Length: 462
Image (cartoon, rainbow, N blue to C red; front, side):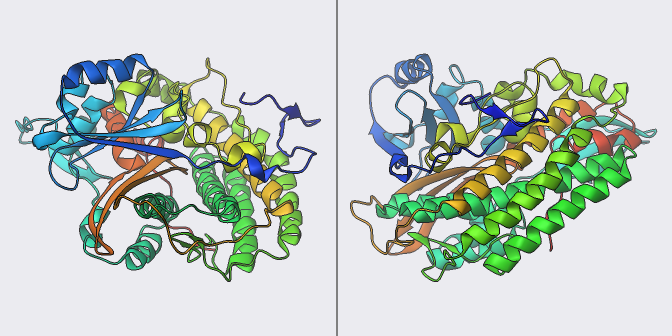
């Protein structure tokens, strides 16, 4: 458990500290940029690995030469490296950072496919992978595609790009938009007011709760507990209705802009919505133990057991990585609002199976996210919501947040106010490599197993 914490009478985390929030504790995250590096790149990367830095993203970069993005836990900052002369750092980093091999696969492909298909085999497309099927079983799994939201956004104005991300990418849109806007703010040197950071966290956690409840409800139904699944859907609808009443959209879309939030954001009367969230939390506290104790067939945990301990080498993020044994969570690495508001996390027991851990992680996230939202709305910071200009921006920036399915990052470069370059780190791409365990499975086993790394669902309505 992070940061200690009290327990309620039913044994769950009490996520609402009794004292007021000290909003002065919220500090901006530092982004450190180093480019045109000379010298021994291998020695530099080895030193960074020895210092405990974690590779969080790699991309081609705006002017040739790959850019590597790291989290530095000691200094609570991110470090961004690019070699001079278009030299590749990614191939060198593979010796020191396990996640580099995954980024090499994503950026350069994993090699030529061995397409020696038998005449009796067929190919089935599934969420970015191709499954070679023969006799009702999955023979081999190939990753077949990447998602490229940046293609349609390059040369667009910043405001247009943000609206497109939010509207076109469903539940992914909240995290994508937030990471993108943070990158713009970094590029322009904008210092976002604390009130905007706090309300952005509320919007992000609302999307997390709705995504997790949809996922938990789908799993419960697939395991034959449709009443529990229906109750999860009911809690999700109740939350979506509260958010829509407050922000005119069930996911709170349309409010996040570069520099903070729209100035007409409804900051008054948030205490009333905190009370409504408290009622929803009460319903969820009664339901969540039943969700976490759903009966799981042994064959499922046996099949998923091969994923344990693979999070780092696979580059996985989010609930999948945490279920596989990783503690990576941007809310811990860049705490800001979360630390000030007393957010806590309590991951599942290490000796539980993968699906059992995933159920516990998502269910506990629902509890902690509802608690954070209620806490912030009950004691919001009294500061401006928007800063319109920045100072000292370098025209290139980076943003990251913990989306519902995991760490979401964005690297942006601007030219005369327009997007000259953009690249994203998307959880569904990173986590897709877990699909290798489908090889040898029957087709009727695929639906349940693949829910461990597939986001469910793409869109949520009220």
